[in-house]
Length: 364
Image (cartoon, rainbow, N blue to C red; front, side, top):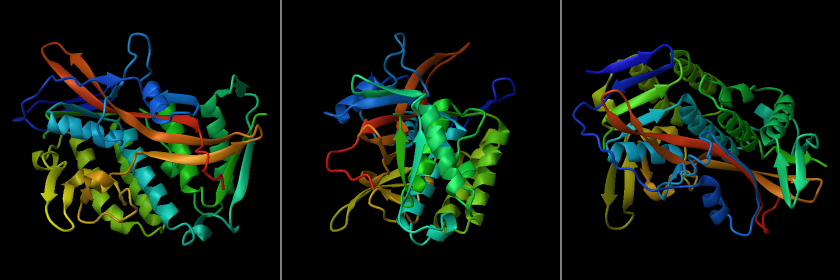
């Protein structure tokens, strides 16, 4: 069985489905900025960043269509079309962090005393006039720095539980887009306690686990820390923890083909209460589905897969009411030719953007 652990490139490539025939089918891709501009018609996208920059040579990085959750879309594409899956620690951890945020928001009053001592919402305002400029109806500039300042000031307000470092993407693979997305997820987790304001004025043949072994074992440690926070997440972490352990085993070259053959399967139930469901370990990354229902027995209705992006409202002293949107903006494919082989690599697309709020959306 072929396996590779690279010390110089800091990644581990393992054959997890030796009997899975690889395919080289490339789906149509589209430009991420153009896609979200079309989705958010009549709104201004003030900034957008992804961890695979779209340049003149590579203007389209997102697979057309598919699931809105890029982590799900990447694994689904690799599994159903027998293509090489690439996973970063950031992909796994950002999905988990979004689940933590979802859980806290659904139980905001229950956990209020864990995070803050005040009632209601306290406004957090930062100055970013030195890094953001309002030009031609677009608030542009160094948004990662502005978001970092907002995240720092929010973290300072949390007295009892140091959750900011746990939720952060801080791996050797973490791009600025991934780190910024994880900072926005912290803001999302605490948005019931704070308001924010910026003053500017079918099978997988191979998997590559990017980053170092330390990165992946750190996810194990972070999951343990999440359990120790006392946020009543055992119903979810009991499903999640074994999956993380198997990913670490895979990095080490300890391959469980049965595990990788059970990423998910599709089940259709007919009649009253029927639907199309996914089962398998991919569902372990989500505590709740899109309707806020708890996921049990690793089963989720495919139409209720979480969105993959969090939305955090904030206002500015210019009268703009905006949203941070961060997380997974899609999935991408790349045709890679090595010395003796050609494969299609599939990976998630992490990023964020800043967009106008809906006209009827309240910034409270």
